[in-house]
Length: 392
Image (cartoon, rainbow, N blue to C red; front, side):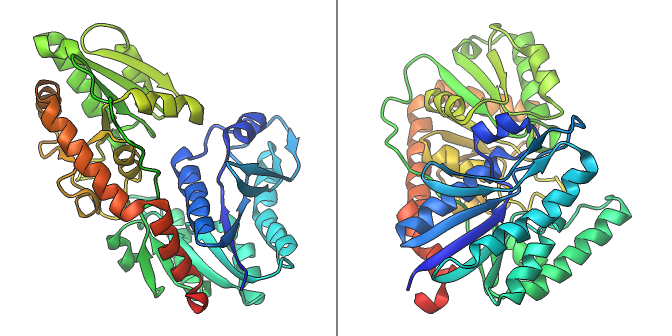
């Protein structure tokens, strides 16, 4: 039987994001959604992304109608988007249900995945339930941390109850600890997929390029990077001449790193938000990828840094904190930052620069571990069996 997968999310391609003037999206979330679609397509499932196509309204009143396009072969149906604040919220509340209503007549068995528990998805969730479609929650984040404003906590609790009642097909979890964050069953961990390309020639002699990408904030360890650079520039060790750092993305710590940008050892280049193509080019030139969410952070157990899969799959050595399921996935195929201080980070960077052969061996082990779990064909079959159990 023909199987169709609808994913309700806010996945965006670069061209649509730029045309609509959106700066508040999540590139990592978009990548994970589109990669999921490509993976299940290998298992014979036909995916369709139903995207909000939105960001923060800038008040200009610009309007963008609903559109459909293919993004790397994946069909994406973008909802309309308004840059008027009130209208923007209303459009995004109604649009996913309208898109799902249009797609309901497509032939085949249908499953609808909701990427996280967003209020904007509620009408679409209720419609899918009324149409008796199989519905699955893709849970990426844990409960709101302590100190969150009470109205947000109440809203979060209401969303949890509603999705737990209405998702008939269980939940995909970003990490094992999230199993306690939902009453849905069955559950399965899904860490993402990557095309693990050969990494030959990635480790040239005499230099090591380190990448910090994604959200650039204290919550992702950007303050450690800034402090480590400051320390190295004060002390001027000889080995730091062979070190270069590239920073991509955006966040509240970006200005701190821009202040340090320059060629002084270690060299630092702050790219800011880049296109997907420009980011891939930076990744291909790097040897080390940083994933430094603090273990003491409020979501250290209940969120998985999907970037470690991307970086390890590309052949980079992942220098990471030991949070969530990272050790479960990468094992000894990563270098762990046990001392989450600037001095600890400097020590790990020094070891990498001075031991490139051993560092490359760890990177190769991480790439193999990622391939075992997140190779698209293998992950796609597992996803398809979970999302369409009657056809398994």
